[in-house]
Length: 605
Image (cartoon, rainbow, N blue to C red; front, side, top):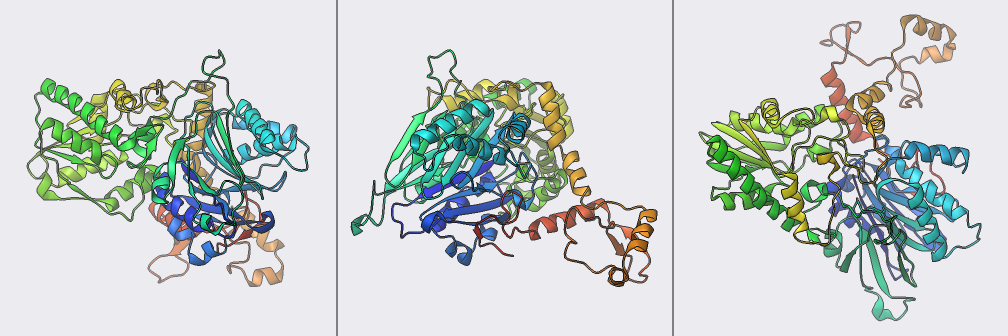
């Protein structure tokens, strides 16, 4: 799951980077792993700054000042395909044809097929594991087919139409062509969100503007439009592409019409309304805030039924901050039960759901939340959360409530049980990691140690969103019902995806960075080493951080009393060290995993 934005200012004398930076800050909830901006300046020159970390850590005043140009593309990332390597921070770039930068939100389901095509037929090199780079190169290859010295909007629409026929999955993409303009398009099913907005240029009074005289912005969520002073936010439709230059705005739907037998089913992801989107955003004509209020009303009805059935009662409703607050307040009012803020949140810890490691998530729950005993002591508590995914957070929260003195703890979820993998860009891939997979509601309650678990029904969840825009006839609810709207997702593909993304696979990949060398091999290498090399043994060399170079397992001295008494780091210590390393690692400018390719990168540690 990622956040993407692009900006084109009408005045060539204005800088796009400061507002792109602000837009990415507003989209930070969509990805906290990495951030990047690429701008286009004089004579079509690209300038970039991207690295692992939060927006505030990657960009400072000096970095922003070096990003020249009146148009640019920005991205915040949480990786669901590929790795967390800093070289995979977006936007990505190819120099041929025409110079293209590219940012993507979502996930492809036919990546392997497309990689084979790019290698065998298009002869284009893919340098990372990211499907975003695959999308970029499919787009670039389609543009290359024109063979033109300069292309126009019609050529770009043709290239995107062909891309939509080739690429299967849920995706929204924005691109920038050097010296030409910005481009956005949305997958044929409209699974991932994207919109556009405009405003009159602040330089309009100067009389020196060419073309339409407006500033334009593409963004994942409408909150960017509101905060940056844009107007007329419009959702980009499923299968639609939009091209904006300083002279014109061109829009076209590139998929078959709705009454065609080949038409795609418009199916926005309902989990955006449950969890990912900010409450002050509007997506596909539906206020996220209003939909969450409706979820609270519907959930209140289900809670009432379940409490009457079981004979239980509740004294207080407490939300898990922040996403569930709106629904919990509405639920409490509906049930006529006091609403209390029983958990105080440390706002300087990231969202636990999108943290990359299970052990990291578990640690951060208690770092993130603190229970106030006066709201829990001797009470039957109903805790409301937006969803229960792995159960890690819920289990810790319930234990915190019991430690604070709660008599009984009932857990209510605004979403139905999540039993299936998501393949369209949300990182909940492994069914074995999902607490609801293969368990009844009673077994889930036992696992997370709740007295009772109450779930929203899928019908009620759909109605909570659909009532605000009746034109939304269908949603992607694949994590709840296992139906994948794009097709092409079978048991074999799910198993393949789980193998690639599982926590175990990530752990193995991380462990592979520190290979263990047998004693016999060490002696062999030592004998082969030159005297000069031997004389500096143990001193870090220039390649010491290279993943491809073998290194001895890390050891530490015990008590500092005997340099020869060493032990291997424990698993917890390795995890802590890995967390610190992730915080420290930065990107000095590799594009798509390679060294700086013709771009000025302004990020340094």
